[in-house]
Image (cartoon, helix red, strand yellow):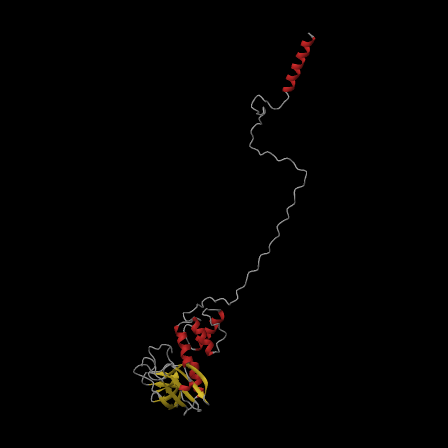
Length: 271
């Protein structure tokens, strides 16, 4: 009987010890506790180490705006189709201001071109390097004092080919060259050597019913006078006279005298 009671006590003790194990070896090794599902993330375990501090990003100062190195093209002063040719011509002629020969319009180029256009009454004086501006500049460059054969005496030279004129004294150019307009087809200005005579501040042309300001006769009914029409209108020309811009006509009147030599050479295109 005593042995029976001891055996029963041992079995009971083993059963109670198996009930405390978190794993059930008889259920395929799976846990007997399953946590309820959740949409929240599982928080990470707290750490006793302090979080590293993050240094603020340094502020970057904006870079200054770079100013253009060249003068801007002014409004209303477009680049012309002969920009570089006119720039080079005005540099060659000199006296019209600073230009950069690069074929690109700038404020300084525009100012110089306008000055040239105003000097020779090229309309409009917009600063655009167009065909007339190029033509006038090239005609002035092509005018060679040596072709006049003036010698040392005061002489007015008229280049029919380039439609230009200038005054020489002592073998040097003392005024010009400047533009002129001579006789058109059927009324050509004759070539040769002449002298000034019959000077009048205003001469009435009975042939053409028009006043001729600052008249200085050269040969027959042909002479210097202030133009009465747009001098660059070459389709009409003159009737053999040598037309001058107002400022040039005044200079010729003040410089030339009765008996001053006049040399006319070349041939006007189209005559």
